[in-house]
Image (cartoon, rainbow, N blue to C red; front, top):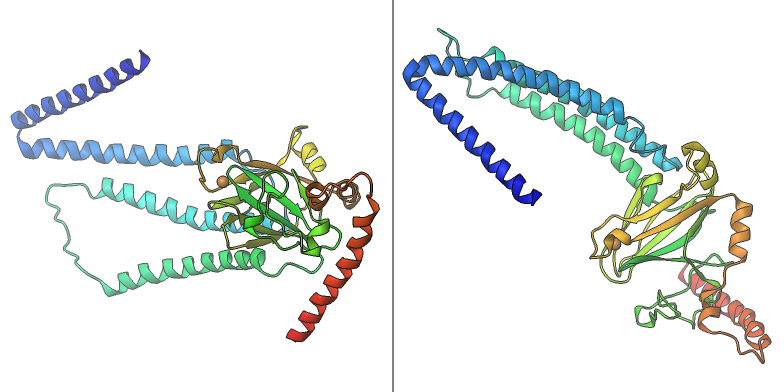
Length: 355
Ligand SMILES: [Cu+2]
């Protein structure tokens, strides 16, 4: 019912506007075309100045009431750099915005049609063309250089002491895998994917997979760099980490990476935001299907001791996929370390051969 009413109101408004326009057209015919035009010009010039003033006040007002309310403090070292880059960009573009808007509306008012004034014919000027090409080009080059510096910073080789976490997108949730004690993720193959016990398709022949575990939450250590290895099982997703100011596409078949250093624990952030329910979130930043909105996971940033305690409780996915027979639990565990060492030696031998 209210929908019909809204449509009716909109139609009525259009009819009213149409009638007013028609009426003023008749008035202008009566008054004489030139006089009517000059009057319209004056009104338009005046309205443009009002629009400029109200617009600039509006821009200031929105900035003022929303300052610090939309985004909270960046929770990573790299995020702080990105924030300062955005601030620099906003200052430069803000100055240009204010100057150009003032000129645009002021000129429309000042140079409106006047008795005895003629438009100046000004078809081309090389100097002007050069100035308004070169200055924006320099400004944009500087801004792009800032952006590239930050981009290379997060996509470059992660520090040696960085922890590694793999995150795989699928319709519609995130699969998080940790490399376990050896610090190395095992091989995976998409044909091994099995939602019952092997969600990322780990290859159980690979010894590196024996201690990898899957997690429902991503746990990170405060002030310790983390390298994310990002992938997808189906369509393109995007790992969005707004609190850390990071995001990276998750592309099927092409692993992507980024690294960053979280600086504030979840517990500290709860205090800072005065919100006992605060959680760092992973969102999907790429429209990926009907369940896109629900593709959310949490990150817990904690101290090394808390992280170690959590990691110690995790069960390797290998053990989940191969529940040990109750009768002889000792056999597989005794074999595993020996096989593991053999594999490591093979890897070392291959690496040596390469060099
Ligand atoms: Cu998605």
